[in-house]
Image (cartoon, rainbow, N blue to C red; front, side, top):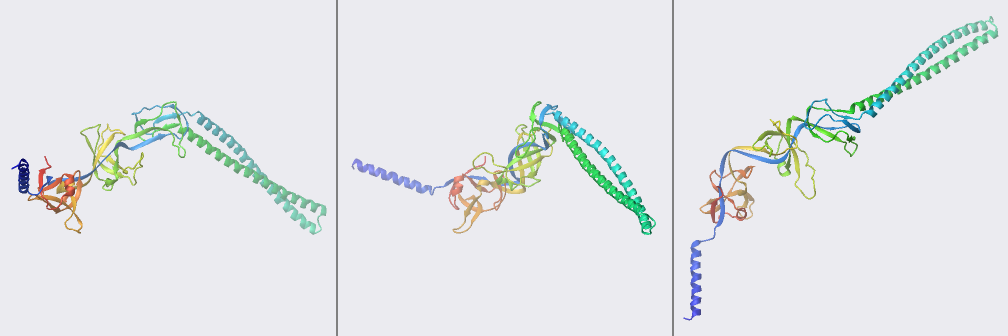
Length: 419
């Protein structure tokens, strides 16, 4: 044989041997990881979130008057009582306004005393004029009767009539004067009332130069120093915040919860709050508030929306301070004596062409992946509650790419995903 012919025969022999070997191996098997369905005596579903420690009750202290801080007798971290003076604003102008208002009230009250005397005098004049008018009228009536009987001269009758008319005119004039004086007295009373209101307003502004604590607590943040100017808030422009007073007897964890989790929460759910600054310590609490609307988005670009959730700590540590960062785990559901599997092992498959997709897991039977429909329950961490597979059964848990493409009945080779 020629050398070329021997070479061809050798290649054919190699191909034949390879075919025999591959034929003995059979179809290729898909490598998969397995885990056991586990029965758990207690299985919980939780939501985790981060946030910060805040005081349940606190007060942001501002000023109702504009001016310079002339006294600041408290320091950050100091404990204060309700009614204690926290700051004193320059009161020179306010004191001057009070003094001026008091002087105005005194002057107007003196005027009113004179006005009341005038009213009394005018009333006396009216009474006297009324008496004179009655007398002259009576005299005129008698003399008229005598005149008509021819017993009284005409001159005397005319004199009586003129006297009666004059008395009535004087009475009308006295009444007009009395009415004018009464109007002036009423106007004076209104001026006194207005001056007294201004006096009360000036006194109120003076009292506001002394800023007092509305609650018992601790000065958890001091934002100003003695000598600084403070301003009063107006529309669209906040005023100066001097300090924050916090009641540290009640502490909350104010959390930001992702929109995907917030609908699983309810007021009253139990929670455990932990802090980096206090490792190894967990604080029990309960959800007391769930935001009704999403928090404003900060920055630019699309971002998942978050909701404010407040957890009240049941036994806060006295060392806790507002502003400390924290994490919380909120229990949303709890099950007893249930079977669980890794969350990623649960897949959707069609058992027949055109049939609806079913939820299930793949178990290993005789070296093949077998799809078993299951009913799912609550999710807890990386596991999920199921029914339809008994505890201890080996299920296919990965890898993720294999699970995505795995079909019922294919050959698999297994390795345990559990340690």
